[in-house]
Length: 553
Image: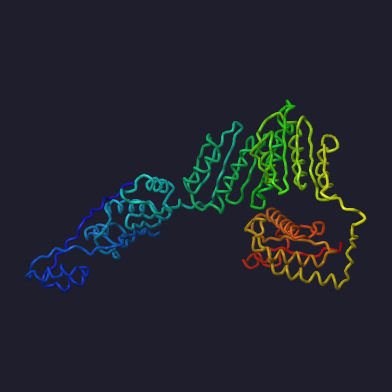
């Protein structure tokens, strides 16, 4: 960047006739008593040379307005400099005051700031002591790149950049894409807000990735994390792409195997990406087995242990990284001792998933695969829990290949069991008494969620406690938990979001002791509005959770 150099004189000289001494005192109140006496002792008509007042906090700003005008404020060390600035096109210097005490290289710093402003559609340059601040919006993408490089390489000597907040021009439609070809090459394209994020995304995509980005502002909320999530999912595909078209994120392509496809789908579900506006379209290779290797290693081994504090530790081998991440995601276990290795049986991932899920139902236990045999042992809290563990293995062929040894922590003596009476059916008055508080609770819309997601906000906990207490007063009823949305966005995404939110409320109620067999999660999306969807107030009313008594048990 180049600009006209400013001519700054380090000291200001004033020429004041003796007969206007009183006027000079008014104009220059910073004179010392000694200087005042020196002026008084001069004969009439003599010439006196005095410095400008010293400014302790020296600062100057230059603001570029959208219409193109530049307005200066603050201090300038020389009248000639102020005149030179005022001579520039569309510049206003009327607010600048004369004062000494400017930092060294003041002119160089001001040149630097004016060169930056010449590339901004609007913005502000500020200099205070030796600290420089720049903010605004660049006139073009080329100007944004030039300004970004300038602050990194052309800072004037003796000054520091305290703040730099210059945006690239805003995009009408914000687009982004990451593509992976069959040979593993990854190309990133579209828009990013700044070079810093460009470097982060390139590092996430791998050392051989290439970028073809344009810089633009106007990116959606959470753009950085969404782009990194997309790159992470793309790595699990044989080939494909993840893209953002200004409205929604889409992951599409072909997985390396059916096992990888299943792992990607589970990861997608675990992160609740559908509720955040994502779509998934991933296919498995035609005629591929569940696991790729054809030669089974007889020494292949895998194990997982669960302690009494619910912590889990994995060790051994798994055939693919997505499967490993999936096991860790569903259990929260430590996977540091697991390696990726070929040679697993064709049904390894399916059997391992069934075993991990069954192990999670035990109070403590161990899961092992060794010499071609799967084994699960441990302790269950009670007989129903033990049956639930065994049921988790049924679909995977427990009777043929699983060895199980599930003991009970304590087996109750049937002679000492207390008979539990079935709930007494309610009459109409009792049913109405249960329905009233639920209707009042639903009308208050007290359960809140994070924007665009199915995560209940922490401040909704008291409302959930209240709801669980209301349901506890009516134990003989089946409950429908209904999710509803406003009409903003895609209809199918709204339907999925309403279901996910209803399920989140059901899970929260189960955690508070409400029997799961009583609860049913239903989602209606935007189909049942109770207010006008064209107003903010109406939309707020339509975004709701409704709790109703469905029937008696």
